Image (cartoon, rainbow over all chains, first blue to last red; front, top):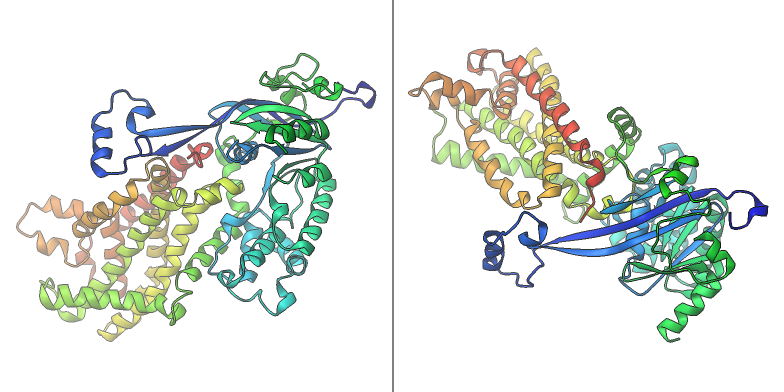
Length: 263
Length: 310
């Protein structure tokens, strides 16, 4: 298509006029009192949500793009611009209000934070996180030592058998990343995972992400660190207020973005 | 849009994806075999996916169970101590103060009461956990991909394991009041299996309702308490309703919670014979279990693609 001499490129993710809306209960007036809630219910004018005190947040507004095999795509934009929401929608984790996302296989979001429990030992969390990502018990057993070594949790003593609530925030973040990065993915999505841990761990994790990129068909990376975007991505989508503001090669989009943010 | 980007011009793309050959997004997707992300799988496929996640379901329920008391000094001892204290409280109120043991000797009444409290708590906590299964775990639902039914099933399984700890206390109480192990104790297994099926189905249905209306978590304790008093947890339904028309007692005794409690009492307690059971009790027990397990599962699956919308 764009480069006819290389033959047809294979799309892995197609977003078609995608809209995502969050609904927040009881946040319409800002008054949290019981009487306010009651009057909202009594005032119910129509059957639509706004009349019932449900506030809508339109997080992604009509985003369309096609991602191809072999691309590493960076997502940039200020806080609250809809980057993480877009990733979750691509992964099929957030239902779309309008529009559709087509994917090749099951895209996976790199992250197991929510499945882990602070009251359990690191050891049990490795197993639980692996199972939550859909790995089999045998796969986890085979990779267990690798995960623990990669996280470096045991460098300073036997911490893996302690509950996760006893870890420092950096240690917990390292273990989470190590568990999440243990699985191979077709379409891989990473949400600011590079920013965790100390310098040595960041280097190790960047290397692991490059490895995952080689195995994965397409990679999406959300980051506020322009350098890590420049290092890993060849295409960038710039989101602002839920709309796709720019889509193009990394250098050009980043140049405009830096102008926009006043760097 | 791909041309513009590769030509080096800045592309502002709010137009539908048109990758060069005039295909719409849907046509392009169909051509390369792409499927809609997050679509609901057919029922058979859904069951297969769920079976594939069975290890996760079990591990998650055990993890929840362990995490519960991990900060307490006595640790997992609370698994047994909690039901024991519960039984003691109910006994002192209903056995000693209110004397609800009409028509029963103390040897029958105490095990009768403890069995009722434990088995009803099993259903009650499954329902309460079910209501919050999705709405209380949105983080998990929005982060990872798995059949959402894993969550309510896992919570129901956690309650079953909790009940098995309570059974230790129950055995001690039953034996302490003079009913010793006999062949009818084997009936415990089918009774618990049927009640677990019933609870799981109910938890699945409540999970869908609770995902749409989180307010149910506030409302359910009152509904559950009403159900408890109507199910004869601390008194015998036929004896208490002796001067009312007989059909009222029969209907109350056929309600699922009462059926499973009565069957368990019949299995465990020497002085609690089959004359205390309503007619067709096993058929009713199986009927409730199958009806709720299948109905609840299908009802939950029908909204599979909508869980996680906030």
